[in-house]
Image 1 (cartoon, rainbow, N blue to C red):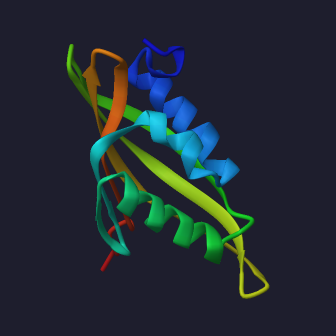
Image 2 (image 1 turned 45 degrees about the horizontal axis):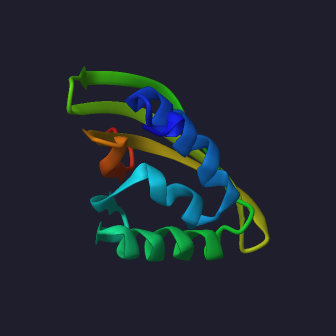
Image 3 (image 1 turned 90 degrees about the horizontal axis):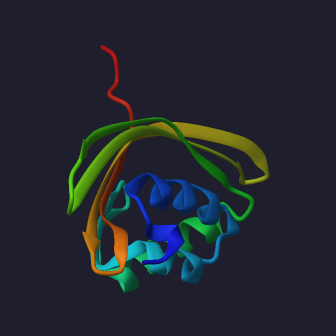
Length: 129
């Protein structure tokens, strides 16, 4: 088992670290081949679709910094785990500083080689009316 995939907590920490290198190939070992990502840009099923979504974002936000806060492990079992968190980002958009945040959920699964991300759902915080 890869030390990067030894536990769900390790996978999420490594994912949060590597995502800021803007090189999707570094993330591939942490992502299940059949993973599904739900972003505001749509549903992205499989590694190729996820790569396209990540790389499109990185093209728009070339200097983006992304991080996770307040991870809450809602379940950790022998074969599956899930967590919720706040995600935050900072970048330059159209020459102006920009930042944002939202809420995320990640589901991980374990196979013979360790833990991998099987599903991620990022969304905006609900609007208070």
